[in-house]
Amino acid sequence: MVEQKRKKKKEKYKYNIFQNIGYALANIWKWDKAYYLAFIPKIPLRVFLPLAGVYFPALLIGLIEQTVSDAGMLLTIGVYCFLLAAAGLINLFCNARIYSTNYVFSFKYQELCSIKHRTMDYENTENPKISDMRNYTYEGGMSGENMPRDLNELMINMLGIFTYGTIIGALNPLILLLLVVSTLINYAVLTHVRNYTDKNRDNWVRYDRKNGYLYEISRQYEHAKDIKLYGMRKWLMELTIMYQNLRMKWHKKIDNKNMMSGFIDGGLRFIRDGVSYAVLISMLLNGRIDLGSFIFYFGAIAGFSGWLSSIIGQFSSIASHSVNINRLRAYLEIENKFNYGKGIELPSKSEIPYEIEFKNLSYTYPGAEKPALDNINFKIGAGEKIAIVGVNGAGKTTLVKLLCGLYYPTSGSVLLNGKDAKEYNINDYYTQFSAVFQEIALMPIPIINYMSGSFEDMDREKAYKSLNLAGLDTVIEKLPNGIDTHLVKGIYDDGIDLSGGEKQKLMLARALYKDAPVIVLDEPTAALDPIAENELYMKYADLTKGKTSVYISHRLSSTRFCDRIIFIQEGKIVESGSHGDLMEKDGQYANMFNIQSHYYKKNIEEGGNDEGN
Image (tube, rainbow, N blue to C red):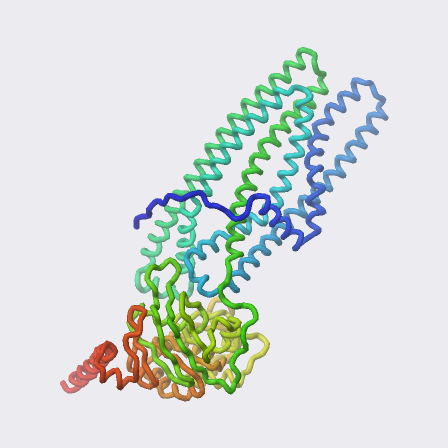
């Protein structure tokens, strides 16, 4: 696989660094106002505690030189140490409060992202671009969590630089100038590293997404059989190693940049500290300062160098946090197109079953050039049973998702009893559909809760009736806990793993339990054995009685019990009519049906000949 290098312009962000700082601080105020009781006092304490420690030797030497009495010296030292210890304890409390609360903020940001994912439009969850944005949210949440802490450190550094700089400037302004210039050079180097990282971030995020997907495949129970039986372990391992190596290349590039900036920082620090200490020693030897002052200024220069080095890191860190928070906010601010507000009233019971119309309907997937559906027009009569057929990729499932409100049309509309689906509140609209899709996603919850979609209002009698209609009741009744048995192995002790056919029956039972006015079945018999499939066909009229129904299948023999068949090819309707009409027309439907029926006839004839021999 060849990964092409992409030139990327510097990304423009909606919010500046000050707005993102305000965003992080506002969230803290909303979640935990008491945080600021530790945030504010920590700033002066962190500056003046080291300064008091630096000043103590100078104080001690001064007391000795002044020949203060023993009692006076002990009293002065005792009070000084007591105040220092008290301030130190307060500082420890502030540190503990800030760092312990960070975990809470981390969960809060995770919760924000989780809620956003659950409440965003379904089609956004399938958009690869938005999936990449979601991958950024972890870093954004971490930055939102760490931004206040680093801002606190920045304020401490700024106060430290001002305080220590004032002391050093009064001694020798040239020392102060040297320290500041070296720091600005270091900041420029770190800014270059940060910009390089930001510019190339997309290059490794896609590898992170792929590695995450491969990791999920390797750990999921349902994939274990295929991996073992079909020798996929080597392929999976090679693919994982390949993407890990591609990711590591970028990791090494960033590490090398950081290492080079570290070398430059070390060299600058050696020069500025060496010159500063040389000047200080010269002043002591020339008698311009006494021993106590020498010790105090020596500590002040060391402290000032530390504040300067730290503030560069803090500026760089806060700038990086701002980038990540911008991406987090971009994800959280993705607008929903669906109507989650007040919608028109749902049709009354007297208006059921529904008439459905697809009017000038087109849909193009995000990033695609060609529409998946192109100007679809047809009606489904009230209570009519429609079959939608066509080859893979024709647009059948896309059409069903548009009907169910999982997508909104790119153009055109879906009408429910003559009213545009967009006019309904989307969550109200979802209640009108009982759907069985090809993709089956079981959850580790009891069967009754999975069917009802609730943990409070469950109708057990209705659940058993639905299981019976779906042909799964005998399987469930044999379980020790019946419909209270947990689905999915590996989470609960009584968890079960259903076969493919049993899963499809459970999906059907869940759809029947919902008892919505429109029932949609997308390949509902793909994993069923022929007997179970035939039983479903025989029951289909009863299952869909009083409902409008849409049935999708590749097995054209299953469409004969439907009132009308819609044949879709390359996103367009090419044929429509009953099974008899389409066979008489001798078009593409008839051709596909004859190919499938010929296959079955050939198998039957070969089976008969074998018996005769």
